[in-house]
Length: 317
Image (cartoon, rainbow, N blue to C red; front, side):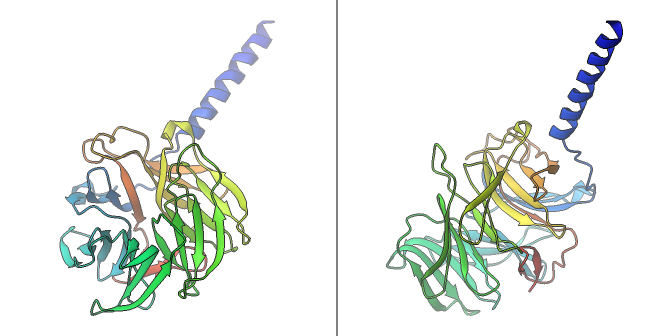
């Protein structure tokens, strides 16, 4: 009896320690990692160097969506009037466009032009994409009139656009036709799906917004699986994400509008494609509130503009 009791206690202790280890991945796996973060709650751009925190900054920027490496040591952020370019190391503003009021997001295309995203905009109904050349002149207006919501856009390797629209994600051609579409799994409230990225096997990865998960869809638009958790990180709203060179996915786990969310959840999460949380970063509640976008800079040439390749990973353009 005593032996059985000892064995049972040991087994219980082992399970407890295992679960604790699984729920709390080590934050020291990447001690030198460098991050660019967009804090929507405080409307700030953050640079975080885990090895050299003296280089960190937290700089106020206009409200808006998305962030992208555009070369010359700059990051581009979408604003409500167009975009800004900021020096990555200092956060200083080095360029801006402020003449397109109603912009929702901005993205640099493979041809070097800028794509602005709007809704019921520029005299058109539904989702509107404006392509601007280097002189900020409109070269194309692309319209998807049958959609009533839009978040972010990603250009595919063949020149189409992956667009998130609440509980839907679709691939549109520049002529306005839809060639692929999927619907997120049903939730109790509007998902506000954030970002979509085509992966190497032809599947499409979507950060599901208020679904608080990643959702994966096959080439026919059929739901494959979802990835989230564990509860200890308080999954709330999966927003901007990046596919790393090792194939893992790093996502911003946004926690809510406004300045009082810095102590809520763990807001930067890294998953394997199999769904295992292998790394996380806990924000500083004195400096951050609710992180909406993330870029992991390790191993990237900041002097080169970056786009996503056929595997969904950031590569120099």
